Length: 349
Image (cartoon, rainbow, N blue to C red; front, side, top):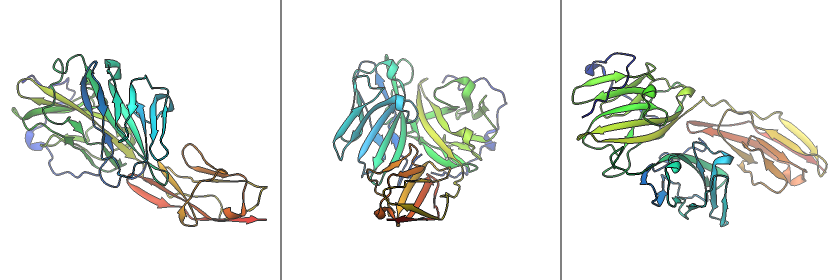
């Protein structure tokens, strides 16, 4: 086996010093079961590829795909809304992509320029949405760099955590005959971003340039990170070494969130005049997901109601008598949720 060593800024750590006992805490709505993700995929240049969704919610009503990491307007490939049968393409559409009815993304005749992270946003009823990430690797030949996975694609289980907690990044589809591995921060196997390496056959553990003193590779290959911070958010890479000088690579994402602050709506009682006044309510919060309620029920938007791009501000213009009642915002991130105090609105006519 070729050496797993990377340029080292700290010496070897004794095998006996490895920590085994850890706990796993598993960006928009809170996933009801497992984390939404795109199945990372390898492909040969010129072939057609389908990027599939893992842990897709069964009640999905729409999908938006993006190139790169995050839901950027300028990286939008296409959107499919299944309940009204609407299909739209975006800035990043090349003419080779198509979203299937099950939400997966077909890319025809892939090129090496298609290599990289992809993002999917899945829309659910009641204005709820979830986000997932995955990677496509396109090679001239799958055998001239990383070995072709013998079963399912190697990947890191993407995870969510609250700032200050301990997290374990686990490996999905780990080959049974692995003899060592290296973990990296960021996308790709760059030695400057090496966290640590573990070689089982010679029982050697080394830390790299990106080691902060809080990371530890466990015996099962997972990476334990103590007291995560917002700076730990991002893509992680693992390279797994096999016998015969073969190796596989996998990617995954860690999202770290601030502890949720209690949401507030300004004022306690508001009086407006029908057909004359408008209303602007802002939900002050650090949460990534906001849901509005009217008289204890999900708010159904009308043509007179608009939400800001981040859903934090609700505008009603003009006001009508049927708008009188209690307004409230519920906020959440994948770790917790909270409700604001209700604002009572009175409409004079």
